[in-house]
Length: 92
Image (cartoon, rainbow, N blue to C red):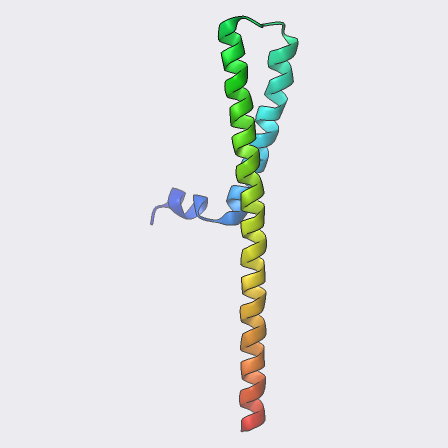
């Protein structure tokens, strides 16, 4: 597995990446609107910016959920391991 695949496969990284991209695209929306560029080509560009913003925001939300799920799975695994070791210690 390559370095970029390993990086983009981590939920923590994806959460941070999509969070920062959401903020970046969100800041570009008012800049585009307040510059007064409302020609048809610019309107299409604005819609593209909006689409990028919404896409990154939804991906960021999904990555946040994935991080929480990973944390819960890890906690459950540790609890099960502790319970098994306690049971094994009690049987001896």
